[in-house]
Amino acid sequence: VLTQSEDIVFTGDTLSRGNIELDKPATMMKVRIENEKGELVRSFSVENPKTGKNDFVWDGTDANDEAVAAGVYKIKVDVSYTDGKTATLPVNVYTPVASVSMNGTGGGIMLNLIGLGAVKLGDVLEVSYG
Image (cartoon, rainbow, N blue to C red; front, top):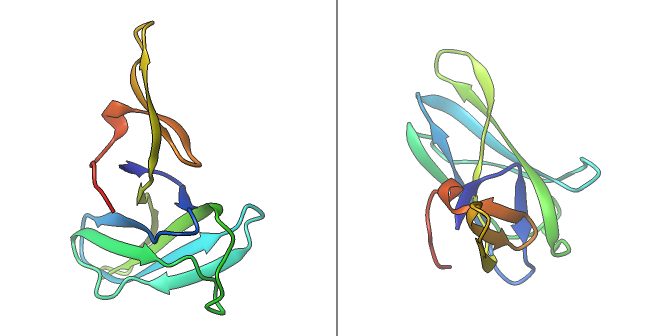
């Protein structure tokens, strides 16, 4: 499922992917993947960022193109707009669902995401496979 998160899960056997929404034209968008210590693991640019949804894929490799361990990593996106302003943007990431809980005390339906924990069904932006 797609949810907004500061974390991205690398399972070790699938690509990690997501998207960033731009509300105005940009000249540059840089994605940073960091480990739990805040150390840079990988950075890459999103080619030709456009207003609207910009998809990205992380293959689970570091700056030396070596595979990283499965786990939860921090993700940050910095953008430079055509008007010269810069910003750090929220990120939407796809994360596998481990289970679904039906909370009988009025809490509603919760999706338990691998590595990220529980999110409310209402916080899910998209359901997708693969």
